Amino acid sequence: MSASFILIKRNMKLFFKDKGMFFTSLVTPVILLVLYVSFLGNAYREGFTSDSPGTCKLSESIVEGLVGGQLISSILAVSCVTVAFCSNILMVQDKANGTIRDLRMSPVKSAALSVSYYIAALTSTLIICFTATGVCLVYVAVVGWYMSPADIFFLFLDILLLVLFGTALSSIVHFFLSTQGQISAVSTIISAGYGFICGAYMPLSSFSEGLQKIVSFLPGTYGTALIRNHAMQGVLGEMQKQNVPASIIEELKDSLDCNLYFSGNRVSTSTMYMILSITIIVLIGIYVFLNKSEEYGG
Image 1 (cartoon, rainbow, N blue to C red):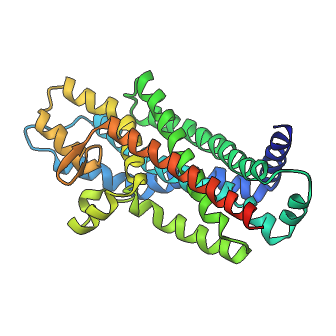
Image 2 (cartoon, rainbow, N blue to C red):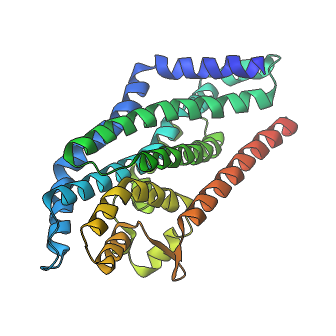
């Protein structure tokens, strides 16, 4: 156990010591927030105002609350996974520079080594994502705050689960990588593509029917929906208090992917949590199996 702790401490120290990698991981969500506010904020704002019926015009504070919730949920849903891939790069760098050979020649067990990579990446990613969440919540407080303490609690829970998912997924992918070039290629693909396939950049309702069916099998889609639900639950509840028809609120939830459907049936929040939790357990199991196979394979 002491060996695992030392390795975890070593891995985290190397990650935070690399100022370029650390600040890139930390600043990326903030940059996304600035870009979203600058370029997508008006588009979201116009969408909420133009789509509302003439008999049900939304107040400016409600619109700003909707825009803020959609923006931060998109950013956090993506960052939890993309930052995990950045935080876990040390696992591949040790292979690329030969450090892994020295570590395996030491008395340290292979299990302790693999666990240290996972926990160090998980902890580093959580630090960055929770910090980014704090920044996002400050933004929401400025533009239109409707979140309750329960919403904030579940938002952090969603982020924890999505980071566990992202770290497990990155650990499996990085297990098969061994060069800096491969790291760059995978990081580029994940950064460019994950936001689209998880429904963060574009609502799934805007996808074709075939593509919607495909992404409904991806666990990241449900992680995005959980974050979006808890980021926007307060403002949607306020709309209900202001006597906005329930049908309009449900249509809005559908268009924002707060409501997700699988084979025509609505997926409940508890089911989303179950899907994400089972996926995390399965991915961690695969990661453990891969490391065990490598150990026995020599």
